[in-house]
Length: 561
Image (tube, rainbow, N blue to C red):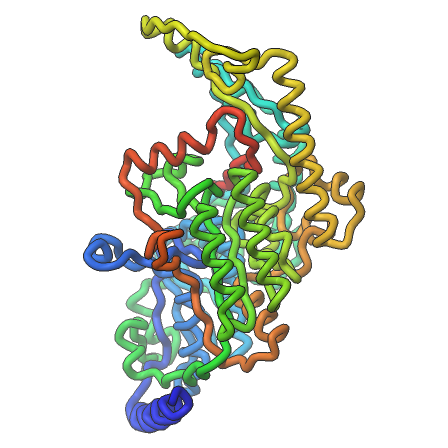
């Protein structure tokens, strides 16, 4: 029955394309990119909450739209209007990959913007031409990471961080325990920024057809006014948006431009996905927690680790993985990981469930902006790990501890008395710091978990335990550095991971690609819960419950100025 429906739909699609060919398609399709553009997004909630949850355009959606343009021979190319793209290096590289595919298909890609900051300019250099508005500029930019240390501030209100980490490179608790960067944290920050800067220079050099040294001179000379940018060949032309039709065509015969929303009704339809076997995409994004996955109740104006981030719960992910292992229609699975880690027990539960998939069908890992610590742990069952050069990964290590709040109670004149029974009744209590015996016990516990982590990586990467330990210990790497050290197999984005999954399963390139939704069964909610503010805050607090072992990476901010 499914095959018959597919044939009927294919016939109607062919007829529709014949009708569309009789019409006129635009010469250039205009895309406007603004704000955040993640690779994937959580499934939207069911009605009526869907009304208050607008659809997020993802890089995956944009790729589908670009493919429609690339398959229509009547369209000459696209105009990409960039307005403050808010994305991390791996996302920018995925966007550059999409532009590269359009150019490989013979389409002309022109980028136009009022101003170019580092993100916009890095993306623009993947195109054929860079255009700038009169009066605009190419801003001063570079790579910068900022780290904040709260030990003195916490002490002022009577709170103290008491954490044990596996090595000094496991720097996640430094923000709560230190007043400045450790030598190891500074060393790690330098090697990360150096590699990201190298990637930016190479991107600009390739786009401007100059050497890397010349690209460095060009970038270091910023900021440029519009005329100076043209003079320095930082942009190809300075012109207003109204002049685009004549620029892309001629004065006598201007090019026809149309935004994608209106152009899509005239573009040729792409071939239907074939029924039958498919590739499933399972998303593990945000802080890894015990319990169910959730999304923040609202978007924060700036990123606050743990507090306003998405959460991936083991109850949800494990149940999804079990369903995929049993589903006979799913021939291969791509796991898209975008997480800086979290609960060690939940990471182990997810990895064990994903291993059951890997034993039955190809399992490919696609790393997003970050797949570090617990995010790397859940990647270990994959037959192949794919990351962008700018992905933040590694951070193979463990930490555990608690916040001591005794001083806070004294400062706010809260009087409490504790009656306990048992030598270690206060082991996890915030009323006191760990004793030396307790600290040794905690060290023994996280050492055992660390050995488990090393063994998982060793088994999956065909490396010895010592080889893994040499690049582990909490050290964080870019995707390109991780590939050099054997932690990543190939550089690329989600599309490449899907392609590798299709190849491993022997599927046609027109097979269906399905993003996995949470099950409707009791074990997980019908959709990722948009938790209430109180419930969401409690999930965040439980992340740092005393004594909990954490696979948590340092938040590695990345800013271009």
